[in-house]
Amino acid sequence: MPVHPAREVIGVLGFPFSKGQTYDGTEQAPHYLRDAGIIKNLQAQGNTVVDHGDVNLESLPVDEPNTDIRNPKSVGTANKKLSDAISRILKTNQSVLTLGGDHSMAIGSIHGHAQVEPNLVVVWVDAHADINTPLTSISRNIHGMPLAFLAKELQEYMPDMPEFDWCKPCISVRDIVYIGLRDVDPSEKVFIEKFGILAHYMEDVEKYGVKELIERSLSQIDPSGTRPIHVSFDVDGMDPALTPATGTPVPGGLSLKDCCYLAEEIAITGRLSVLDIAEVNPLLSSEEDRNLTMTNTVNVTTKFYGNRRKSITPPDYELPRPQ
Image (cartoon, rainbow, N blue to C red):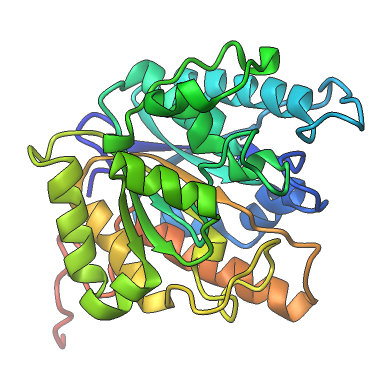
């Protein structure tokens, strides 16, 4: 099944980066996810996959330790490189699977996507809203701010940050839908309510079910059913029992069944253009928990590209007959 009407090849791109938050480890996630078989599993489904390696982040600038926001130079420079790489791959008629990396990666990923497909919509699967500004953030970590850099309506609340001069706001709050929220800062709640951002908290998932929410979400942000879809999938959107190897786990998250159904429904649209996998941290768990996280992350990722739980008859399959 094609990934996108004009994008039948999946381009895999690693973003080995951890400066958007305080824990080392997310920079190792692309390596671990490849070792866990993410590419082999996609190919086994019949997908054509091109591995573009990792974004080269060897020469990032060094940040002053006393800045109000942590690591703005390195985060800004790394995401500019990611944005350029995403755009280049999309221009070759490939979709992109981006293996992060902390969730600051969404700045570069969505920005690069919008340079090629400005009509995109964003499905944000996460326990957190990640729409703090540098002025409202409690943690000062940019992985909690990516949507503030990208949304046009929030620019009046953003301070001048020369490190991100390249990142011109490229989406509207009307292009965003959240799924799985359960740890939202007060300022983020104000932004969500002020701008009417479509937000589904875990209470909504439990009340209505993922099936109704994803149908409602796609029909609201893309009533014509024609717009390219960008999914930014933070593994902490899942319940920590399923993905314990992550930096900011929040109990009571999405089940494996929820995530598989969501991914399968996105795949059925044929319009998935870019998928981010964010916040896998192999260093924050035991080997057993790390392996569990990798297994569940790979499982859900493959569902976005046509791996259905419902069996599909292979093409040209003939039942064997006795001779």
